[in-house]
Length: 321
Image (cartoon, rainbow, N blue to C red; front, side, top):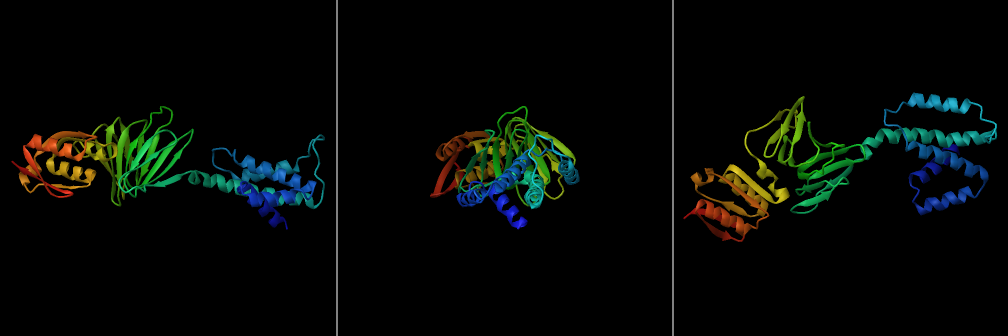
């Protein structure tokens, strides 16, 4: 019977908003003063479990303190519990609650993570509790934990662009396979795959760590983290254009036209190409900030003295005049 009683009370405390369980509890409480006293004792233990300290849970020390508390004589002004089976009924509820509290404390660091997967077919967005914004490619998945002490996020799949709100007291950490990105407040892009993760900064400064190595990135810099070994490499060049899909600001610095066309094709969801090999290899510096496709094509045509030929609804070819 004691085990059934323990389960009955803990079931209610774990789901106190359930009207059916509330009705059952009230009916049981109305049965007598002993039930109400038993419930109040169990409830105090349950609520105390929410205040467990942040250090590792010492089960043995907890049992020792409980034993000391039980064996100590109660002050004369405190109501003495009647001998007999009443004490064991209380213990049957309280002891499982203590064990359950320890379990939830050890599990708490993981249960606090909130998971979000992008649903939109083009670009999804997520506002975090600290005011930071995350823009996600279709299918990208993040897990985050934001509280008074920390700002942590895991990018478990896909690609995301981050605009992290400034907070000098809480650093923002993004975990990727075998690596971690740390910032105080800035904008950057992260893409993950089975083999590696790459981090590109739009503005501000971030650190990327993996396998004992740490690199500092500023605007336009990129770092690549090997998903198997954690090795971090920093290729040369300006890779700011990789952030363009997220902030609608595509900036190219001394990039080949081939890279420009591939990036614009992905952003505008069209097919842009040229059959001129020398033209594909030519390098340009250009910026398309919140610009519709027709204006972007006009800018390219004027810069390179080209003609834009529309072959179908979503296919364009760039040719020399």
